[in-house]
Length: 211
Image (cartoon, rainbow, N blue to C red; front, side, top):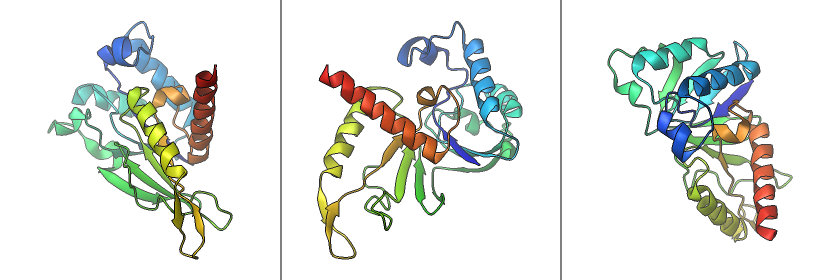
C-alpha cells in the first residue's frame, strides 16, 4: 500500500500554538500523537511519500522520530526540512529524497511537489470514462488563505473548455489535493482516501458559504 502525507512539522512548537493552532498541550504531546496515528495506519512494508516539511527538529531529534515510524519512506523536500542540511544526518531511512517526482498509481499519475504547481504535467488527462487521470499532490499551504485561493483557481480552471486529443470539446480536469496532515487527523492516506477527504472538505466549505 502507498500512502501520502504533508506538513507534519514535528517539533514545531510555534506552529502548534499559532499558525495551525493544533491544540496540543505541548510539542512533545503533538509528536507522540502523530507517531501513534502514523503507526496505527502504516505497516512495515507500506510506502509513505512525505510531501515536505516533515520536521522542524534538529538532525538527531528527527532521526529518533524516523526510527519510530513504520513503513518505507520517501521524501519530497519542503522549505522547512533544515535537518537535511546537517552533515551528521543519516538520510538512509528515506529510499529517496527529491524536490519533485511523478509516480504511477493504479493507471493514474500523481505529480508530487511540496508546492502546488498551477500548470502541472497531465492536468488535462482523463481516462476512457472521463475521470481525472492525473492528480497534483502537494503540501505547503496548510489550512490558510492560500487554500481558499487555490480552490478558487481550480474551480475556475475546471469550468474552462479545451479540445481533447480525440477532437471533442471537454472541461479541463485540474486536480489539486493538499495532503495536509491535519485534514487526515495526522494519518498518511492513500490516493483514493485523499480524493475522498478533499471532496468532503470542499463540500463542507461550500455548505458554510451558503449559510
